[in-house]
Image (cartoon, rainbow, N blue to C red; front, side):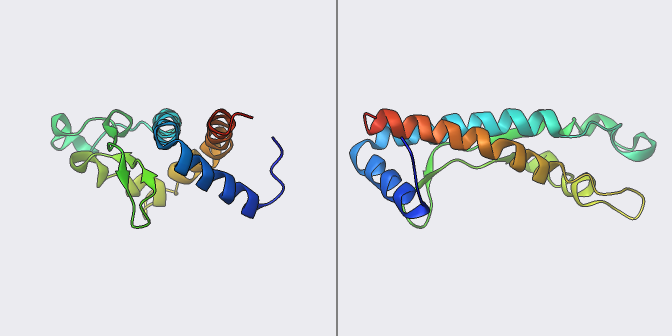
Length: 133
């Protein structure tokens, strides 16, 4: 299958959604699982809170990655959120954006960039299956 433009890609995706919602949902779930793995590998590992303050209350960020179940966005498209849980996620922006003592590592953006081609390939393969191409 050769997709020549965004309009054709969007049309094929809409057709897949109409004809095979179950396969589209599986594509979204599989893509989320792939992104979760990439985010887990690129999340930096640190020594926890400075001076060991409440160190036993904080687990490494990479082990606190979660994904939601399948849900709909405002346009009724299927989606799965992937990110850090509530108890640990508030810390993720410090290494990602940097502080006065630490340069930004931009690991969330790097994860997104690394996952993009992989996720697109997964989506294309499900589109081919759903459209019998």
